Length: 340
Ligand SMILES: NC(=O)c1ccc[n+]([C@@H]2O[C@H](COP(=O)([O-])OP(=O)(O)OC[C@H]3O[C@@H](n4cnc5c(N)ncnc54)[C@H](OP(=O)(O)O)[C@@H]3O)[C@@H](O)[C@H]2O)c1
Image (cartoon, rainbow, N blue to C red; front, side, top):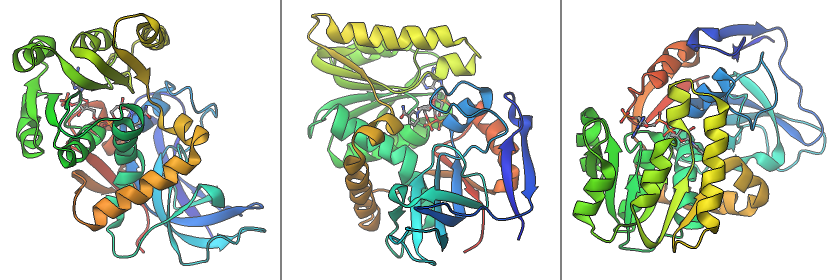
């Protein structure tokens, strides 16, 4: 039986994504499970992979992007007895999920509770997990503290605000003006980064500074975010949006890492660290499963509601990447791969 997938043919703009047809379904190896993918997402991180700016993936094109997925177990390989055909599972794939079928090791799969919406579940795997772990595992944020979220209208930003609201945090979020109503509706005070200096705005609101900043922008933002912290505060860096969007070179990214390390060592009563979802999962796989279970619980109880910007078929991956490149997305883009 044949199946379709979307591949990056070479590094470059969205048009390098092509739909191809494979003649035969992939066969699960020992310990692996074949999954019929129902949904994946188009995320900013996929655009990094497409541009050749995602060093965590060493594999070169042609390859499929797709960092997260929800699907149905289709076939179990030898010694893969943890799941049965027909079960619904989710995984942080890092790449490969822009495909109708994928084989994954059973240890990487998590069973999805019944009754949840697939698009909402897939939003939890990369975006909410990143937000949840940065808040609880990295910053160890406490009820009532204050946070500044950059990229607050994006997939991770909106997740941070929803999770932050559950902790009664005082929240500020940077975004362009058109996303300010969304940010207000999520309980945060919006800051227009295009016309205002967020360091000054934070000073006006909170003279002594803020408890934590979540910064996916990088470049001069890291320094300014660090300056916005109060003594005892923490900068959690987790991306380099500025360098990527201006097609900057990898040196900016390397320098960003070095600065974060230095600021953390220097005696300045503030902390700085870099969060990376796949590295933390490698180090603490038990946390990944525990935290996803907590997120499933919050979704089941209606305490979180992922902001879904668009649902589109996998074949529209080029259009989805164009929207991501223009930063015009509010929340998450879901790619529908197969009907259940
Ligand atoms: N380290 C990790 O483990 C990890 C995990 C997940 C994601 N990430 C990274 O986190 C970042 C965000 O991911 P995402 O999926 O949330 O992306 P996204 O949905 O595209 O959101 C990013 C947001 O950043 C905003 N933005 C761009 N330039 C800005 C600036 N100068 N100041 C403030 N906001 C700005 C954009 O909105 P407006 O400009 O319209 O306001 C956009 O909404 C990406 O760089 C991604 O690679 C890292």
